[in-house]
Each structure stands twice: as C-alpha cells, then as structure tokens.
Length: 224
Image 1 (tube, rainbow, N blue to C red):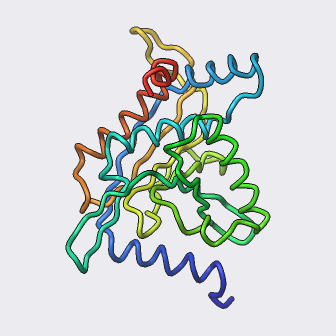
Image 2: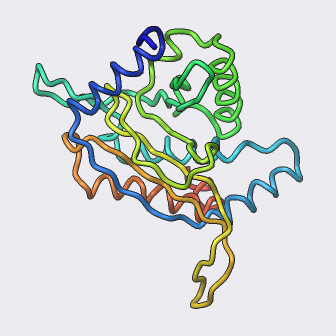
C-alpha cells in the first residue's frame, strides 16, 4: 500500500508533530450530568445544539483566558505568536482517513452558531467537499473520540498547532456527590499541549476551566 494522497499528508503532519513538539498530556474525569440535563431542557423548547457544540463553546471561552494554547511556535525566529481569534479544528474520521476541518472565527459564534457550523463542516469532510482552506486553517483542535466508543486518548497535536483537547464517551458511572455514591454521567477530557508554549499550570487551568463549565453549564453560559 503506497503512502499517497491524504494518508501521506497525515503521515507527514503527525510525524513532524512527534519529531518537533515536546508534548505533555493532562486529563480529568468530569461529571457531565448537568450538561446532559441542560440539553434535554433545550430540546423541550426547540432544536438543541449537540454536546460537541456546547463543549466547543466552553473551549473557545477557555482559549480567551489561556491564549498560550492558541498560538504558534516559530523556531527560526525564536518566538511564540499568540493568534488573533480561534479557528476551531474538529478531528473527523472519514472513509478517506482523518481530517480536521476548522470553524472559522469560532470565537464570534454562539453555541447554536457553532452547532450549525460543526454539522456543516463534518458533513462536508465526510463527503469530501470541504475546501483546502477549511482543512488547513485550524488554530486549536477539539477531538471527540468518544464517537469511536473509547473513553480516553493521548492524541497527537495537529502541527503547527500547539494543543488538542480530546473528549471520550459519556457513560453512567458511580460518583461521589455530597458524600454519597450516586450514578452520574462521566466523561474524560484530555489535553495534549506543547510544553514550549506553557507549563502545567496553564494547561491545568485551561482543562479545569472547561471541566468546570461542563459540570456547571448554566452558570458558565451566563458568564460567557
């Protein structure tokens, strides 16, 4: 099987990522029960955005607070460049292989606006109609590997980006609430980041911000 086309492009990008980027991974288990409850409430009043769009809104807000994770490393000039705005990449598995279409100016979109763009882009990616610009303009990637039936992953950063946030499947699990064991819907979030742009404090602050939003979505959305 020759390495050609999309498979060759994926191989080149991921190999360069592992060669150049000193990556580190951090993760957290999150109680997503309130997020699922909120989506149920929204369904009762009309079309509700998908869970991925809701998490995407929290990710964009988190990047505004931790801009180090929305940046580029220029090794030739010895500089780290913080980017203006967020083009949110979405890892999508297609029959041709893995592609990452990006929601342009995701920071300007509401949760429902993000939902519409995510659905449009993932459909275009799977149908092979996404443009070259849409497939190469991401500044940060959100990877919903939960759709593959897995709980966690240490993903590879999509070079030249500096971080990727992964989300596993949401499952009912035993969880301690107010000192009592209860059944809650738990999801694992994992962040892989370029250690050149920040240290664990920044990475931990970002993933904890997103996790707190997932656990308290109504309060989070009121503040965003």
